[in-house]
Length: 248
Ligand code: HEC
Image 1 (cartoon, rainbow, N blue to C red):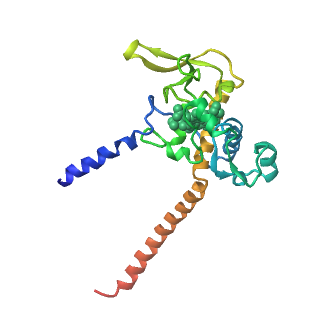
Image 2: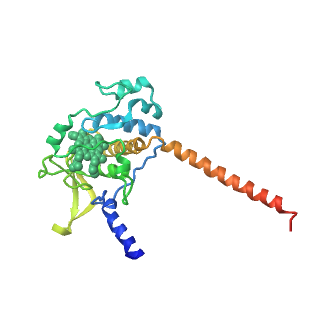
């Protein structure tokens, strides 16, 4: 096999990987930064209250939430599930065997989901952000819910009480049916649409942070390294010039 054929083969073999996060619609970007501690604190709270019922985050310790500016007492009072100790990791409340029975699939561990699901369409956080904003009622799947990003997803809408029920507005018919990007609010949620967007953004932001809690430090160190390299290049360049200035 020549080089180009081999390269083509490798690229084709890698295609299923690239398609892992094949979203049916374009992903929206999370409008928050992982340096925004207020957003991350809010996201952590939503995560603990609405996701740990089915999912675990077994690489994440509750104590690590102190890095988000929360005190040990705040974590214990607001975020800890009754059965857990602050030193433990975020375990799931549900029995995995039952989960498999109920949903047909096991809810994945969410510790690094934001990295696991990142793909060509956007980051994993963008994926979750869009996923949790595109649920609609559908009587066909067993959960009673369907989703535009992940059609026939096995996860019922975990935040439906907050969002209320919505219907996507399509244009065209049959195979030519396309999503217009607009929604009809069918029943009201406990949050306003703007509050809901904000809540899901904070949650997705938290998932991005949890997937790599050192990322803020890594970026800060990276910036200093670049500054150092730049200054060092300047010094080396001038030093070199001054060493050689009398030799000609
Ligand atoms: C009622 C149980 C339940 C709750 C609560 C729940 N999930 Fe899920 N989740 C599932 C199941 C089941 C799946 C597997 C779905 C599938 O593969 O079809 C899943 C899958 C996922 C996936 C992977 C989707 C993919 O493309 O593979 C993400 C991300 C996710 N959940 C995030 C969350 C977040 C964030 C929350 C909290 C807001 C949450 N889940 C709450 C049951 C749940």
